[in-house]
Amino acid sequence: MIDRMEYSVEAGSLRGKKRHGPFPMQTLRHVEKPTNLITDGVQRIDMRNTAYGLAARGEYGSAIQRGVQKSLPGKYPLSAAQKDIIEHIALMEANPVATQKAPIPQDPESLSHHIKSVGYFLKADVMRICKVPASAYYSHDKQGNPIDVRFENAVVIVMRKESNAIQASNGHDWMGDPISFQAYQHLGMVAETIANYIRRLGWDASAQYGPSFVNRYTVLLPPLLLAAGIGEVSRAGIILNPFLGLAFKAAVVLTDMPLAPDKPIDFGLQKFCQNCKICAEACPSKAIPTGGKVMYNGYETWKLNTQRCASFNFTNKKGTMCNACVKSCPWGNPTTWPHNLVRNVVMNAPLMHPVAIQAARLLGTTAPIPEEKWWFDMEYVDDIIQSREPIGGTNGNEETR
Ligand code: SF4
Image 1 (cartoon, rainbow, N blue to C red):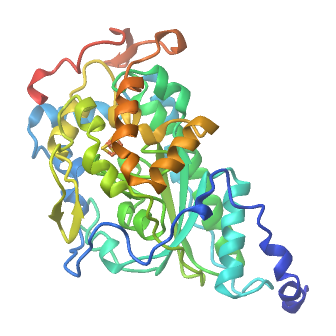
Image 2 (image 1 turned 30 degrees about the vertical axis):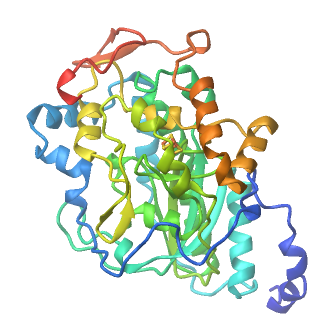
């Protein structure tokens, strides 16, 4: 058996700087608290009262409830195929926790560096760690069973959405689900592998990932993304990363492995979003507010109208889920050097925000690129694939506007 001390001596070489991942997250300004106010009054949320839960229960009306049911088997053949794989991954039973700890360093810094490196090896885009506030746990699951506060550490895993498809799409056509599910498929594999590996090393772990139909979550992700420094709260009501914009999905592995938390980040987004309303203008259901932030369940945030957003998505007659905010946000521009130059200027010189916003408007990211389109427009109707209208117009349901 390898002696634990052997690794401790080598610990320095195990912390080389090469495993930082594809984005220079380490260069950002790290702060003690997230940049939006969070009070002590945050209440745990019942999963049955999320937008998806309310839509599924019929609280938003019967048309939307029917839309949820219709979306469950997958409306579009490619997303239905992806859904089969995601559900297959989610059937995995947790392997037992090893009865003995592995002979490796036990200090939180070494273990954190190692687990992040494993994530980057498995092709995650960003790996971060945070403590889990008890209020981030849901109070009840979809069946109404109480959820226990079990683990205090979270490994946060981020996977980017495929940017070429986002650019080619109009933001609310048939590629909405496939773009999200592509990230979820990879997140499922990475999160399950990391959780399985941690259990083999002798600590407990739970992988949490997937779209709403998978039902793997016991925690809300946004508070963890904020605490781990994945991004800041945005006008679109979701967390925005400075290198990916809104174009990513996340998963977490909750664990009792001792880990060293990362810090929240501040790249000036609160001021930027205050002036920029591009996503609100691009939102086809007008669910994104154009005004200021409000307090909601102890969080200072721009409050998305989740009923409008869910209504549009689940009654979309010309596509699947909507990505219009993701597509329109200028922070989602590629990480090529000209865009990175603008990113740096914007992060370090708030006076340049109006110029950057005006330039983003003029250059525009909301128009589809038809010559880049490679998918067919089609939909399952009673298990038969039917041809559908291509790009253009709204979701065909004017009531949600
Ligand atoms: Fe913020 Fe503008 Fe992006 Fe909306 S489009 S999230 S307002 S930066």
